[in-house]
Image (cartoon, rainbow, N blue to C red; front, side, top):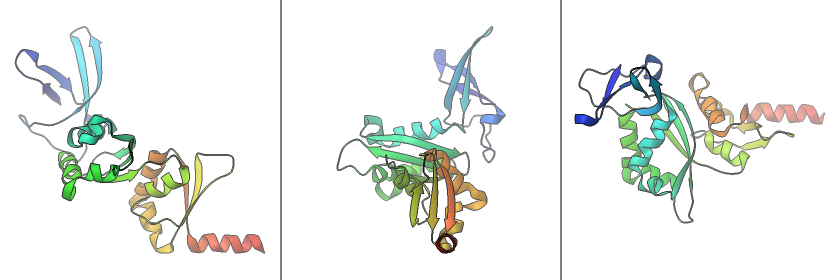
Length: 208
C-alpha cells in the first residue's frame, strides 16, 4: 500500500509492503492510520520511505504518545517482543523510586494501554517489570502464568529451567507455544518449562 504522510507542500508518499502489514488488518482509501518509519532509502526518484505496522518500534512509539512518564524518561521500555496482530510483551523499568512502571503504562482504568490496544486493533498486551535478575525477569515474562521456580543453568545466563504448577503448564506455554516464545524473546533467554510433578519425579530418580 502507498501511505501519504503529511499534507500540503510537506506531504510525501511512503511504502507499506505486504510483509510490514498485519494480516488481520484491512484498510480502505482515505483511512487514517499510524505507522512506524523503518527506513528512508535514496533512489533515483528521490527518497523512498519504508513504513511498518508490524515493527515492535510502533508499540514503543504508541506508548510514548500515551504515557507521559515514558516520554519524560521516568519510565523506560527495556524490551519488546511482538507477534503483530496477536500479542505483545513489553518490559518496563522506573528510573525513580516510588513510580509504578506497569501502573503508569496501564493508566487509570486501563485508559493508556487501552488506547494502544485500540490503535493495534485488539492486540493483546502483557506489561511486566524489567529486572536485572535473569530468574526474576523470566518468571515475570511468563505472566499470566504462576511460576514456582526459575533456575539459571550453570555456565550460562542465556538458558534457564522453569518449574510451574501442573495446572499452569498450558498457560505458561500458551496457545501454540506463543507465551513461552514471546517470553524467551523478551528476556533473551532459552526457557525450558517443566511441570512440578515431572520435576519432582526427576529429583527422586536422581536421588535413588
